[in-house]
Length: 227
Ligand code: CA
Image (cartoon, rainbow, N blue to C red; front, side, top):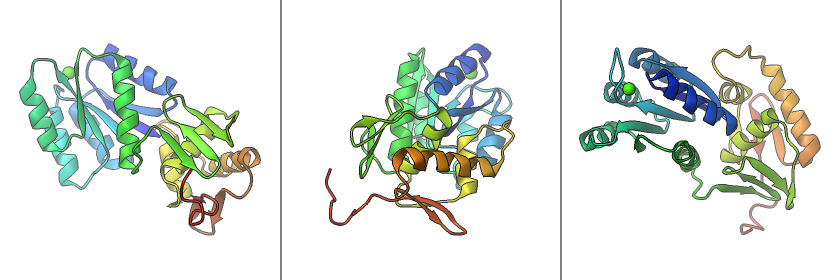
């Protein structure tokens, strides 16, 4: 999952970025509204953390422009504690949630997790697909109850496919959501990670859809709808 943090306070920006990276996300950052707007307008993010008080362009304007351009990624806004009007303006502009400053970083992490899974249509923090389980809270994956030993890249691939299970996910889409802006991307590496994942979870769960990408399928979905 790839996130964008737009915050002009350098310390706070770094603190949020580090906490998100530690939680397994890849993170791009911007420190003013214009740069933030440009990134959110041109790059595919799974969630954006957007400060309201920003230089160049304020957060509300950034958000309004994204929504006007049809950018629909989940957006969590950061507001000053006593500015209730910012919360109202932010939500009216298209924010999905807000956190008031000062905050505990765990609150940001919990809200980001919830926004990402809600955007993908999942109501709980534990995602299931046949024998596979991904706990988005602990960043752990298991198969038939046994914890899988995955590298951070393998986990990201699996987590993205789990959030988008039964959908065809192209190699480009996977690449765009696995690496930050500065990473030297090589789409072949996605194939390598999928190959390694298949060795750990079995060959059948991740289907290669020729010419299109990958699809994570639950076995016997129709016969076994419950877990
Ligand atoms: Ca600010």
